[in-house]
Length: 72
Length: 195
Image (cartoon, rainbow over all chains, first blue to last red; front, top):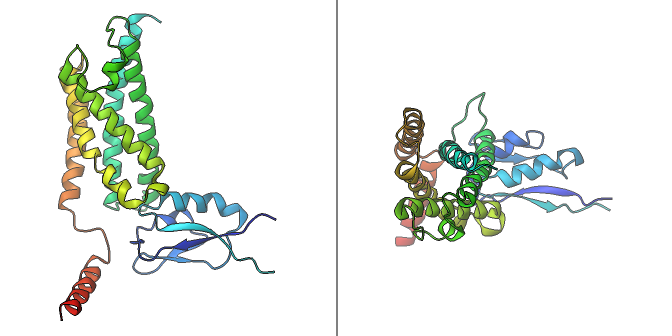
């Protein structure tokens, strides 16, 4: 089984540009001030490429992919 | 390949480079200004900015390589890589070399932005505001077609586009929705430290 990944946001770096929510609306929505709210849980396989793009396109490098803790 | 074909390619690729680079600069400013609409999502500015920047380098390489290998000019590779080393139009070609090398630094640091960190990347990215005018000046100064009507129209449109975008950026309020909240918070922190 492949490693499960999740998204994490650095709340200090993030300044609410909102690109991530445009690129990955399946997992990211924005609060009233334009800051991301992430869906809990690992990233489904079919959304990985989009998640990768959301990470790479963040103007302030505030979002990253991390290995998710797997439940045994 | 005939010599005149190389020469036409140099000129054409130079003009295309100016157009593409100007579009890239404008798109970069649009994304810094957080411009968006229902039909123009923010990732479109960013994605086009990146892809057109890579395209710019392709045409710029074509411009430089065809100029150097053209036997008529016999410029040599040193003239293309070392600023102001060319016997031919030393100043104008030197400006072109400087612009090219700045752009190369800007693109390479952008490709490794994740390793470099945001702050260092951004500092280098500001060099665009030097690379673009130096490159435009190179074109005006030494372009074979600079003063023909069509090239004047292209150069004029590029300068106007970038100038308008730059003024918009200079005069725009902070695009940060929480700018005033942040300022208030920092002021409060400062007051507490003073006491």
